[in-house]
Image (cartoon, rainbow, N blue to C red; front, side, top):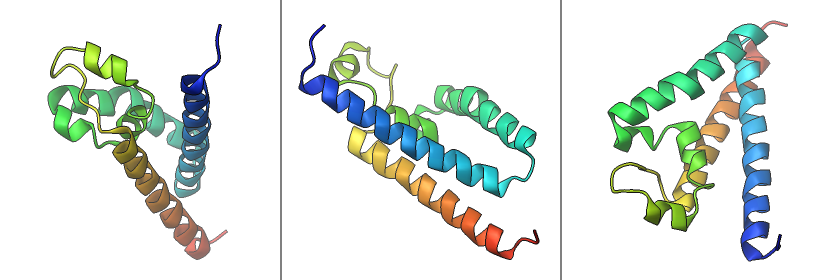
Length: 119
């Protein structure tokens, strides 16, 4: 087992992805009052909806939140080793910017809604 530059890059990407996903989840939880409904919606979205859209329309699916985030975690060697058209992902920087955009929009909507919602 060796620790090199790739290892530190992977650790940085994983920590950044976890923090962004946590903020996204908290914002969605703030938008949807019921925890069960929020969790169910997110699981169905991640495991069913995004996968179906990515399969049916790969160019559209690459812009969805968690597919954009996944672009960070796929190495260049993996991208080159997969046959053409099998893996349609954004560039890592574009994927990060896209997911950050989803997080900012969701968090902003949650803050606005929480300020106006009756407690």
